[in-house]
Image (cartoon, rainbow, N blue to C red; front, top):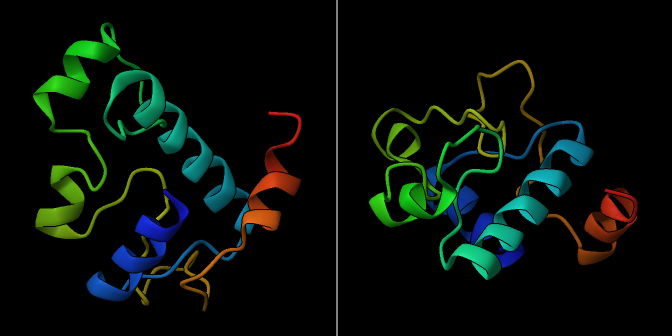
Length: 103
């Protein structure tokens, strides 16, 4: 999911949050959902039935709002004009591990 997120940033001209801990937690959540549900379901939303939502696909990353309007609820993919957008389109595995070690 880290590599996917980096590639999508470049493809969509978006950037990770200036606070890399946001990026790390979201990427870890996407990876966990991909492993357990078979799809990278948005980890920042509440679902009555995660399996049904993953099959439906609307909230699978990149979700429909991101693909259609560049609106990322998770703050993973931010447009350059967003106040929370950083300058990076990359994050290391070590950064993710460090932030999410106790999550």
